[in-house]
Image (cartoon, rainbow, N blue to C red; front, side):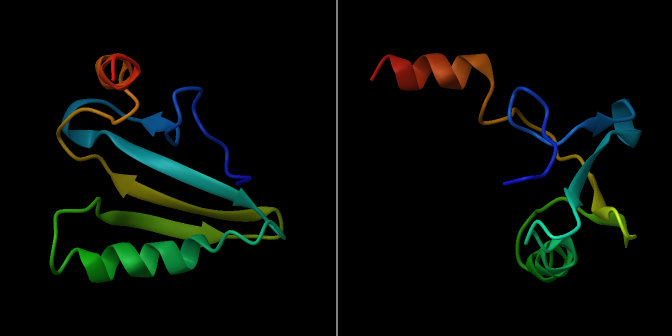
Length: 87
């Protein structure tokens, strides 16, 4: 995948507290369709708790989506990695 990711495996976080969210970016020609991902998130939100799509866009360089954050802990958090390593 060509999208830019934080070293811990998640898209870059923006904001803090209640205004916290994430932005995913994919370069043009990468084959990653963030518009389709935004549509799937919007659809899934009717049935499950998923990040809300706050905004999306594209230009000649690539495309991006901004989503809200959900409460909880990332699956790539150190405690989950440690638990998996102990199995």
